Amino acid sequence: MKKVTVSAPGKLMLLGEHAVVYNRPCLVTAVDQRMYLTAELLEAEEFQLNAPDVQVENYKKKIKDIGKGEIPKGAKFIEIAIRNFSEKYPIRGGLRITTKSEFSSSFGFGSSSASTVCIIKALSELFDLGLSKKEIFDIAYKTVLDVQRKGSGFDIAAAVYGGTLYFLTGGKAIEPLSIKSLPLIVGYSGIKADTVTLIDKVKKEFSNKPEELDSIYNSITVFVEKAKDSIRDKNWKSLGDLMNNNQSLLKKLGVSIEKLDNMIQSSISAGGYGAKLSGAGGGDCMIAICSDEKKEKVEKAIEEVGGEILKVQANAEGVRVEK
Ligand code: MEV
Image (tube, helix red, strand yellow):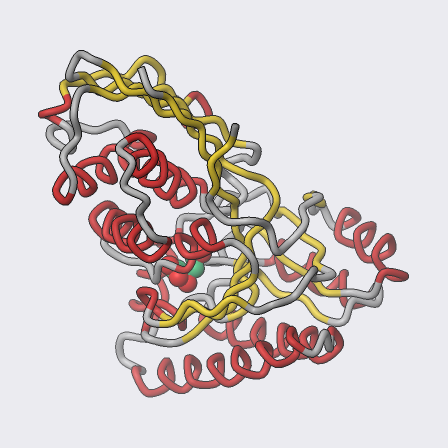
C-alpha cells in the first residue's frame, strides 16, 4: 500500500514570546533537527501509531473512533490532526503512522507542532491533495487550539514554512525573512517547561494590572519590529541589544528562572552581543548572538554554569517529503 515519509524542523523563538499570544508579532527560526513521520495506507480501517520518543507503542484504534475516548498524551496531536483533516477530506482505509525525532521533546523545540504538521503533510501526499502551506498551517493550528486551547501558532508556522519568519498571532502574517544564516548559540537549561502553565502564570500575575501587561507587550512589539530590520541588515550587535531588552521584559513577566539568568549573563560576560530565554520560559533553552571569534568562549561560559550547548543551525527548511 502507498507509503510516504515526511519531515519537519524544530523551532526556536527569537523574540516576542508571550506577547505573540495576544495579537502581537514575533520572530522565529526553524532549526536543523527534525521530526520524521512515516505514514502508510492500510486496507483495514484501523489507525496504528508508534511514537517511541513520546512513549507511544503499538497504539491502535478503529479509524471511525479517531479523536474519541481516552487518548494517550503522546498520541493527542496526531490523532486530533487526523480527525481535523478527516472533517475536510475523506480518509479511505486505515493508517499506520511511525514518528522518530532527532531532538528531545524536553528542549522546547516544538515536537508536538512538528509532528502535527508532518501528519497533515503526509495525509496530503497519501491522498494526492497537494495542500498549500497555508492549508497545512490552518489544519495544524486548529489542532493545537483543540488540544491545548491556547498558543499563537508560531511553532506550527516554523514547521510548515521553515527559514526565519516574522509571524503574527494565528498566522495573520507569516513573512519569511530572506537571510542565509544566523550566528546563534543555543543553551539547554536541563529543565522541562510547560507552555500552557507559563501562559496561565503570566495571566494570573497581571490579572489586576492589565495596563502594565499591555505596556510590556507593546514594548516587546517595538523590539520585534526593530529586530526584524537588524536581522535583514545582518546587524548582529543591534539584534543582541534588542534580545537583551526583550529579556528584561520577560523577567518582568516573571517567566525567567535563575538557571536561565545565569546562562544568559555568562554568555554576555564572555563577549556575546546579547542573549535571552527562548520560548515560554521556566526552563527549556536560552539563545545568544555572538561573533564567530567569541563563539567558543561564549559556549564555554554557558557550560560553566551548567547549560548544555545544542549544536543546531538556524534557518532550516520547512516540512518536506523525504525519499
Ligand atoms: C512558547 O514557546 C511561546 C509562547 O509565546 C506561546 C505561543 O506563542 O504559542 C509563550
